[in-house]
Length: 434
Figure: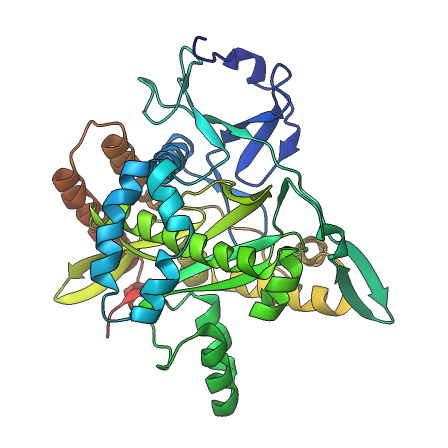
């Protein structure tokens, strides 16, 4: 049987079957169990929809996705990682035992199960699995899994969600965002929540996360932790372990495998970025249930991970983001009034039960919320160069050492940009190392 070839001209300008903020999905008529995914160059922050676009980001993010999924499916990669795990957590026998149980042996034998089938060549439309096509494209093909959304239940003025429909089901995407954290950054949701708590509640929260030390920005944990938010509610909602267990619709052993699988996959991703001098802080996984197996699904790229480089500038160290956090920081630092308007609209939505986008739009129309600002082309060019450097490495055009040097130089340019715009101190408050 020859390789699959897709006529990509059929999808140029076609209406997608599903339109996300950063990707489009199309049904493949000849293969109803598969879907064609097209990554777009647009970007979304603060849940406001696509509000900026970065050239090269679409192909680069697709290439990162293809590379990581190829590594996840490689038994040889997992065999190599086992030694790293044994060495890295040799002093924590309990955590090491947890990671080593069950699915790691399976991964070493046949790789992890994923929904990823491969990337299409931009010219020929030919599908490449486990290797890069001569012409990397925006397109990948994935196996389709059912999305079941919870039912909304109203109780007086309260809103509840009914997840009972997942019990006993199979072949579905588990309705959890599985967040793995290697450490704490100032933008971490757990750090923001931690700051709002009193001393007694802080201790309880640390216990819930499985941590002993107080949270401080730009510090690493002894071992990665896994926490959860909802996936299909209008806004992500932080969950306790008990809530996540219930919502998953899985039994106890499978739920522990969700945690174990998320942590192991993250160690693989951390290993990949470390060769480029980039430090992984956190990332999100989505996992589907397929019989008695768990499957990595959805995209994994710089929209769902947080990686940084450490850059020395004027005798001070900074962390520069090579992910969507750089755009979040841009809006917060250089357009603070708009950022505050978004937060205000979300607060209004919590009270009204309506979408915060409705509140934001109404406020903008009436003039008491500022319009969504356009991104400075100079800042966009810096972000484009980040993606360009990563893409050269992924395509085999540049080596690891040259890419490390290139990324450090781009990071320094981003710091200089804030200095030139009189905002270096604001940037330092978020990304400077004390």
